[in-house]
Length: 398
Image (cartoon, rainbow, N blue to C red; front, side, top):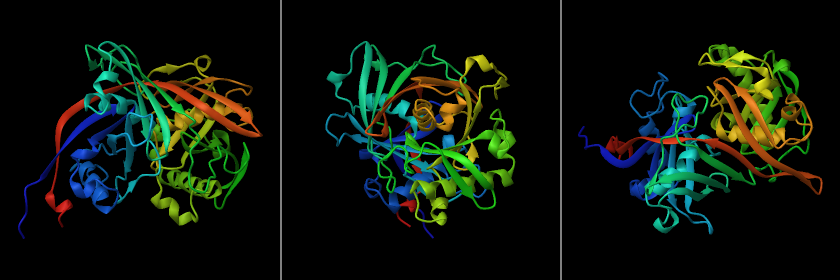
């Protein structure tokens, strides 16, 4: 059998928030991968190094976690009033599929920077010094994100003193606004609470019944009380990720929640929709030691939140899940709001495995329906490597 030289594709490896991913301009992808479908998925799987039965992604750019098994494709804006289209792919580590069902809030922080540096934002829109406002069309969920990117001497400023728990080094602050973040998921009717309730009783065969807040905001998310499932809310990754039985229990809860939210038609579909919905558990504020050894004091936070992504407890917090936390916290009566002490609030600071995060949200009730017009948080982003990523030619020409 004869083999061809590898395909070399212009790409940028970036950190955004507490995630990393490979960024592409749509125009730089091979023609067969410029449209959605099997060829694009096969290419991105090979770029990241999946599927890998060893779970390490040694032969690709992935980092063997959900936070580092990601791809982003940017293109000139197709939506009026926007600067760029942003498409996100969550690449499975051990299975041959790419999940396109949701956004990555952390990598959203890098989209504005990449768009400016790649010439996707008109030069006249970029100040020589100041802040460039980049209007992003999030193509996965058809929502608008506004990124406020610092610029110095005409270039994106990446260095700074903004500290983000879950990221070792400080960097420049990028403020993100997620506009009208309720996710218009198929079957959810566009409602923030697809079941019509702030709190439901979720019956899970083999697990039991529990209270749950199921919300479409930022990303569809199922919130349950930590105490009801035997946790304190202070857990770090090893307490859950090293316990296959508990991971399976979380996946069972997530699948039944997805069914009740109308995101899947049957339980079997959940296995091919790992990126959404997320599942998280909440508890009242308490002091604990973060994964870095940092002491988080109860008086510094409003509540504790732990969330799973792609079947594992996240080392910090997904950006889109943070939007869901902020939205739910702003609405009196949700489990998130009650864990934070109840009542009306416009912002919440929560404790996660790596430390704390603050997110704001503006909520209002209109004609009996809760809406959130905007959620705001700060992240940071940095280019890690620029150049070309290489994949075997056989990926596109088997």
